[in-house]
Length: 113
View 1 (tube, one colour):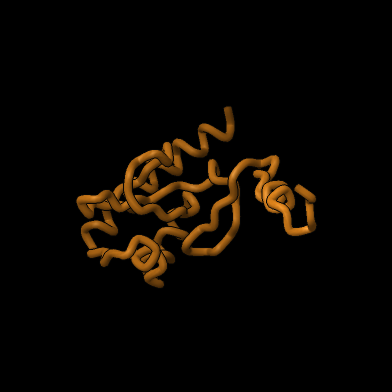
View 2: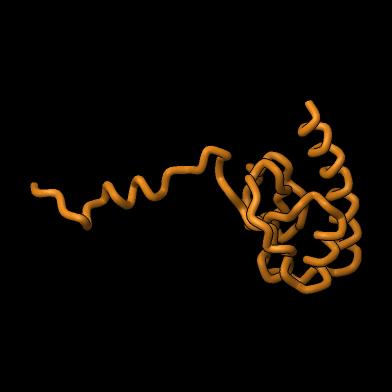
């Protein structure tokens, strides 16, 4: 079969991951960063929200910088609620804030080692 400019090889070469690994966008500040630099917030199939440091928990996820100000902005503007397709009450927002603070500490120690 004759190869043309529309062959799948061109598409495959365009989807190769960057040297820094997969990239994700923070839902709050819209900054594009390597996936390992962001923290995933996940809505489980049962509807519970939690911070997922490994990025493997089943459910709908959204990425956020491990900065409390970024989480606050995502909650205030509603970007996090839209991305997770759920309404976030004050109690859940407070719990996510605590989990995000713990995740930020872990991410900082990972970068320094």
